[in-house]
Length: 296
Image (cartoon, rainbow, N blue to C red; front, top):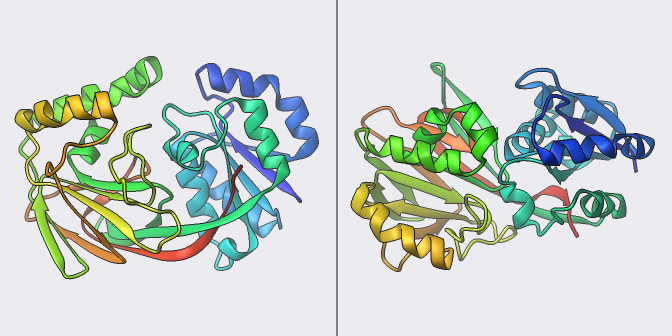
């Protein structure tokens, strides 16, 4: 199996430092492609598909995973020709947790070398980007409204220093703004709220089980709509999330759908796998068991 590892050599943090200590060993078992700017991981992944690599490894966080995933998808036959693997080096690594990948680098690399392949669903979203419509794939989750606004506000320095806490601080800042009114329509159901989350897997923000019914292989998206997002919502949901890892009953409207449209009368940002991509309106869909990934 020919493996290509895509890595940002300027990445900070203890995990990235540990990865560098294993570079010589990893380089004997794969080809390294180093990024130098945002968007490079996508370009390098597309290049790796063209060069015939069997496995493309995203060495980083969920943002790197998303770039590599879309780079594979940039080739018309990319998902048939190439398998996605993950070395979790980022802040939260939600997708790696969903796949139950080891958090320790040597064990995670051993998992990749073992090459156990599985098929999971491949969601995508089409939304407005700079006045035109673009298609993005995502592995784990997407959101519109408050959480995407928090990603807009999060400061890179705080993210590197405080990790997930930086997103919490940005979320609190986003609460001061005017709430969005987003309408989600799918599977003959509709709901409106200030925050809509779409899950392919069960987890959000690390270990929080926001989408308890989600399954990576059922061909359905899990939709979670918060009717209101304000300080009362935070006070109601926060303790349940922190203590139980899930939302309280009836705090949201939840349903499953094969496809979904989101609209809003005012501009509302959209994120996928923690990366801001554009604004509503947006159309979501999912291709069942289309994505090849390496798992335990």
